[in-house]
Length: 196
Image 1 (cartoon, helix red, strand yellow):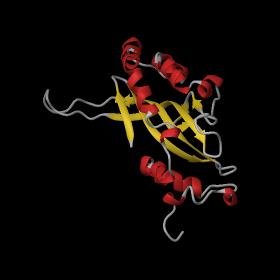
Image 2: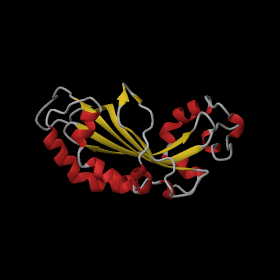
Image 3: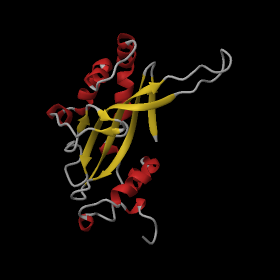
Image 4: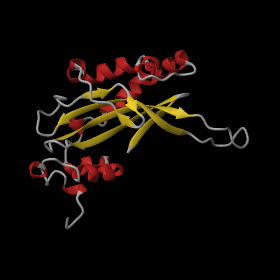
C-alpha cells in the first residue's frame, strides 16, 4: 500500500519497504518516501470530467530504514538518493542527521521541494507555488511516513502485507543474492512460494 500526495507538478509517495542486501543477505525495512514528477496530460471531457494523473519520473528518495539484525529504532540503514538516472536511484547517500532524527530531517527536506528537484537536475514550472504547497502538507507526509516506520512493522507477515505489491522486486532480490546461505529464510517465508 502506498500513500500519494499529489500536487501541481510533483507527487510524494510514502510506503513501507522491505529489502534484502544482495551482497550479504542482511535485511532492511522501514518508510520509503519518494518524490516524482507528474507527467502533463491533455485535458479530457467536460469541465467536470475526471482527469488522468500520471505520477512518473522519480527525482529523489529517502529510505528511513532499520536493519533487521540491528537495534530496532536506530535507523542504522537510513539513507537517501538525491537523484535518479532514468528510473534507477543513484548510490546511497548517508547523512548523520537522517539516522539521528529522521522525521525532523524529512520535514526539513520537504520544506524546499524545488531545491530537491533542481539538485536532481530537473526544473519545475512554478517552483515557488510547489514549495508552498508541499511545505503546507509536509506534516501530513511525515505523519504518513511515521505510520510506516520500522518499529510499527512487528512481524514478517505484517511486513509482507505492507509490501505485497512489491513481491516481484523481492523475488528479484531473492534470485540475485551473493550469499544465499546467509539468508534468514524464516523471515522471508511469506514471499517464498510454498514448496520452493
